[in-house]
Length: 482
Image 1 (cartoon, one colour):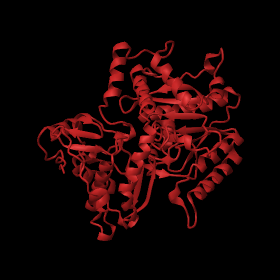
Image 2: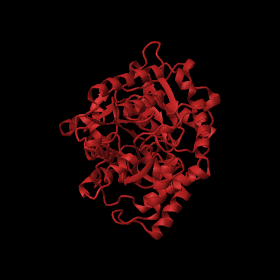
Image 3: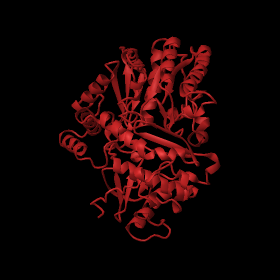
Image 4: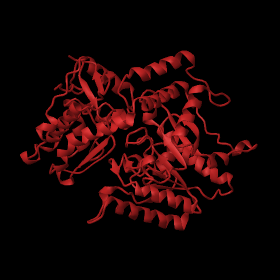
């Protein structure tokens, strides 16, 4: 096992130099900069496959896919080649008044994946921007239809949709939202279908029905003023990988149809195969029934394979058509300079090629099974609860009575010492790795997680130890650091 570098205050060498320069010049995202002496940033020199390497050759398994964006590993040769080829043809041209092949082909192929139900694609740069676009599209659609009073939005408790003002208005995570609350729109909060909220004797489906009933009550009262309901399909990420029954989304779709309210699906984190299907919404319809789709679908993160910033909003034709007019003010005038960037679109096309040509979804089902088998013993650990998995996302919670002060920070630091780049959410430990899992690597991950848990929470009793059969295989040494 490689040991992690010392903190910036006392370290020497190349890593420490980059830490110190970063601290002096960079304002890091989602970071309390006062804590950098305790938690200095990991200086990353290069990446290969699921591994990241610092400037002194230590490796770290990218357990969260670098904030959920990396699908096929770092420095993937095929994805890189697609971007390099596009670089020589056309790096960028404005999409207002111009068009280009990568944007057109990407829009066509994504629409085809919805069976043409979501017929037009509007491009942006990052996830929060896509949410802003979807909210504005929904309101402006109703305004163009003569129903400008429909200007309110509904989101789930503990939802997260981004940190720009509009996106934050439909986010219910206090640490992100509360400081800016005076600036935000007033949105409606309704019950989360999080299966962890099941009461005695309840199933995940029961929780879903109970949450849908609360939404129904709100819509019965306020549908005339509500433009849209926004959800994270199947998994609420920042809520601690809260997973729920697809029944909830069927109920919400029916309610939105009944009360004439848009349904916005935020698939920024859960799209691109993370949950077992390319779009999480593909799992909503009951077997043998017609597919169920939202009215607006937001995509980002994995769509460009972790290479370049890209987001987009897919819309139903009925929404698109509400903007068609000789009156320019009825058009959707949202824009930014790099909308539909050709390099980013070429990366996304390479991602879609990979899914088609290498049967990624079938391979992911095998990888998900290997993860489940290797990590299964953690479900019986007396310190942990709510083990859960959907597709390539696995999570477990530390019980409240086992929690220690600054748990997430301490676990992240412990992970560095066990070759893991991992960031718990509150008391939730989760894995959301690149799609490069093998049985051996799954076992290695289970061993490293167990070591981190024992280091931070104290060594467990022998009865809850991870079985050696599933986790003792050491991951083969990487030739890059041999």
